Image (cartoon, rainbow over all chains, first blue to last red; front, side, top):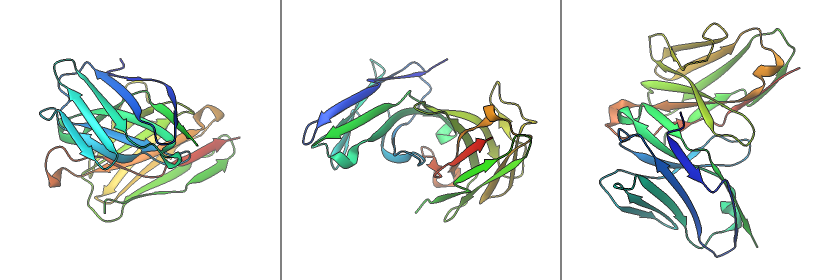
Length: 112
Length: 118
């Protein structure tokens, strides 16, 4: 059973624009929500993460917005750059990091 | 910090052979290591979880006799695909995690192994 739904499946954004990726979860046992960035042929790399008691977290051009009551969270990439072109995965974590459930992924392409 | 090294990065072998993939945490001790499988344009699917010195826990549908996992130390886990067949061709990724740094620590991923069975 897919416990983390992610949308859109693919996204094209112009350079300098804002990329927005949304995730929704069902499992209220998730206690940590990371976002991973994956380039072709590479493993996922942790981008930014948030705990459910925080509504927003910002690191540089990357911001997570978290809505606990709606069980939704989103990644905003400000001033998107061609180098941001990658696949992004949201995830929910239980067991203090011991169990990670990935979303379905979003393939982002930033065009010049 | 938190570097995970996976080797080899790419392997091609004949059907029926066994292939071993290594996953090492280079600068931290991993209390738990995970093995994932990823098909093209799909998400990562957890195959198994292994804790140092104990037997791996396999996800439903994963054949434990086909995918042998050994976690002999806090810095090394291996995945052996036994008698590999073309349907086993995939991208295999490991990750490492330490509970010693406290709750809510992320998993750190290796760069994956592209396995192609001819």
